[in-house]
Length: 271
Image (cartoon, rainbow, N blue to C red):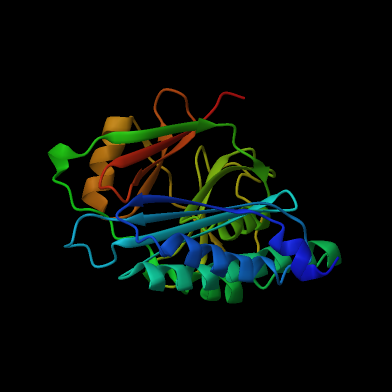
């Protein structure tokens, strides 16, 4: 069986939301199959979601998201554009970039090499101008629309970077293997460099995550807040998320702005 025959045997499931044109799903399916046909790894699942925002004031109302299961490793890409065709084209490019990041990580791990984190941060930041536009809501209209609780993965700093890149996240909450502290890794908005911040006391020796070239570890304290206080910090700070130590549980939590204008809250499950 040829590579083309193997790859096209993978069904690409396309879901739509809003007034997506009838031609868009097939166009998206064709573009994603072009990505899959270049791969040597088995693709266990491939999904695309196309969303057309009804708000005509939004500059990028066409949103495309793809998730593939690359031999057990989820890889995701998420973009927005002025038209659905442009969004699908951008999605193809960004998914190719995410897959390349997965392969780079596997190469470094196999050869026990230190990753070129600084260079990868700059290249990974490219394309974030194609993120969906956040809907503007008055403060009194906003609410915590989604609350996710899950067991945090115990990871090294580099493994956390890999997760951030493979899943095309803006931030990633995890538990640092060396310190046992709940930590968040994200990109600096100005430089595109990776930054890590950790909840809990930072004064003790060995309490900081392992130093990795190209990754900055924050020495600033993480505030201890309630969820309501975190909302106030998020609204006043102008950042896309706030990382805080929950005043009740002592665990690291993230409150973030959703694209629909509301808030999302991520809390670790008890371990």
